[in-house]
Length: 238
Image 1 (cartoon, helix red, strand yellow):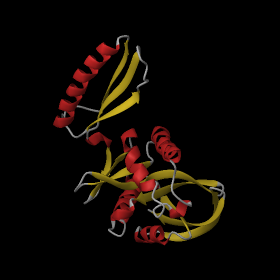
Image 2 (cartoon, rainbow, N blue to C red; image 1 turned 90 degrees about the horizontal axis):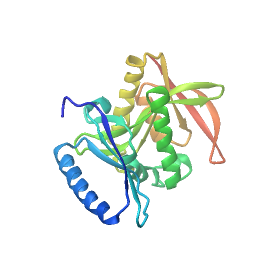
Image 3 (spheres, one colour; image 1 turned 90 degrees about the vertical axis):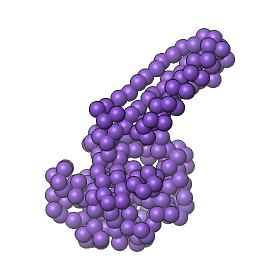
Image 4 (cartoon, rainbow, N blue to C red; image 1 turned 45 degrees about the horizontal axis):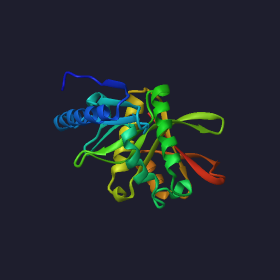
């Protein structure tokens, strides 16, 4: 599949006889499984499937992702754009109370979905956002790291953000990904400065920022979930 670029195959089907639908879906599912066995870069997204007795409408998307979707790589990780199929992995991270202590607790399903939608909007608007962090050894999504535009007082700043599954803390993954994002910002986006905005109680993230060559340059109290949270602005220049 090396010659293939990202492509989408859309089906919009209206099947008036339920028996015809079941026969069709059985054959279609077998075809999809053969494709999936041949390439680990294929993923299926079910967009809509209304359960109607006599009239079934199926809209589905087959998407092939090759290395064009990988943003950057490090020794142990690669970072790629998030997709709808990452929802369960995000829930695993963002619905853990201890992981989300800096956000005043775990996210609901709706909050996770909104978070994911925000990244899609950022990809479209800026060409970057938070990316999925994949552990090469296991091909498992272990966190998020990337670049976002964030409000700081009267300004918008380019921030390196990171959030990892608790099982993978204290292994150097966040620093490894954050350093790579800093390099991407300086070399690819050609910016002069990047920052990380971190709550005062989030010592682990502060340590990552320090290891990324950043220093505290400002403080501000941000209100999130109706809680006043002191934050530090860590910055580093090219």
